[in-house]
Length: 174
Image (cartoon, rainbow, N blue to C red; front, side, top):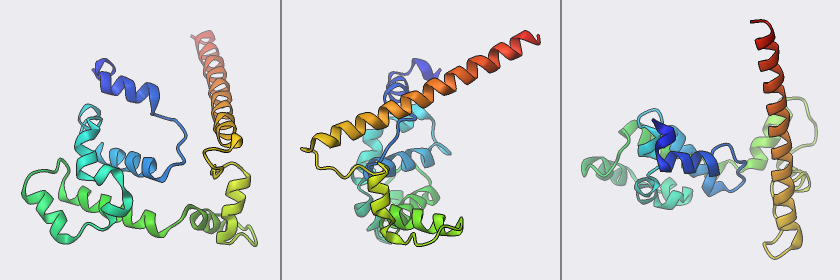
């Protein structure tokens, strides 16, 4: 059972569902999620295998994988994923490099009818706390990260209350 696997338990307790802003970590989670279609969590969570294969989840390095590199990985058996999945990871790395979050958010907002929200929407993302661009040495960096955690924990509390309410309503009808 997955819950008895120490890697899975650690992943669940420390990483799964935690808000992520770091592009490298987002790329890592995307790669691992893609792998789930072909592998089990215990295999996937042995991240050392994936770290070696995908250059420590460096999207820029993976985006530069050549056809020769892809084929060599497949040929020498050092890959756990199918060639199709490997190619998807490489293409997704390329897409991440050419679509900054601000452009994606801007396009989405314009499609929803917002006006004057071009790629400079990044400043909105900063001021709204969607990205934390305070310097690590700035007192606000840690404070902003803590605020994100508090907000996240409050939402978890609301969800737990709703779940308990639904459970009680269900049990009262049995």
